[in-house]
Amino acid sequence: MTLTVPKFKAPKVAAETCACCGRTITAGHDIPLIGIVGPKCVHNFTALAQLIDLLDGFASDRAPTQAQRALLNRARVQLSEIGIEITATNGVLRVTRLTRKAADVAKSAKKRREAFVQDLQVAQGLFGQDAQRDHLAGAA
Image (tube, rainbow, N blue to C red; front, top):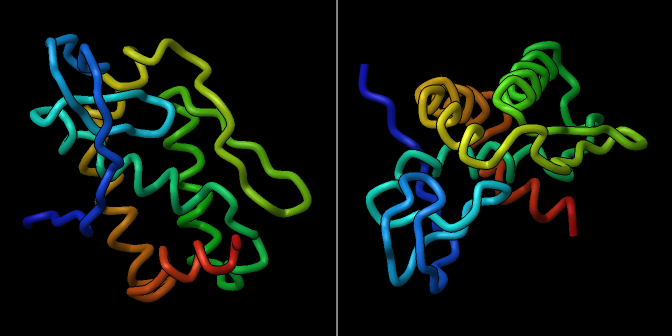
């Protein structure tokens, strides 16, 4: 089974080293909480960045079905297991900080990439193809 990640454009910024592999780079992609990663490593983190983007600012009342709530809970657990703290205030999820060193979180995220991709695919099915756009519009 081939897993495809929906297109995601991480902001491109100037950098000296990749947060993932430590290679010297001149420019990289800014991944939330991880840092700037180079062009060879960015594919390892696009699913993580999308999952963070989907969860951050998500209002729990936008997940009325049990399947939607289960998916959100699974994503929260996966992110917390790799070292990303997620809090809920007044029913709104916030991705707040790393609970482990960024290098350790990056290493764990690379290992779980396929699980993140699967969660994103399920989210597209449960929340619709425009889930990310609707989430951003609802947060504004």
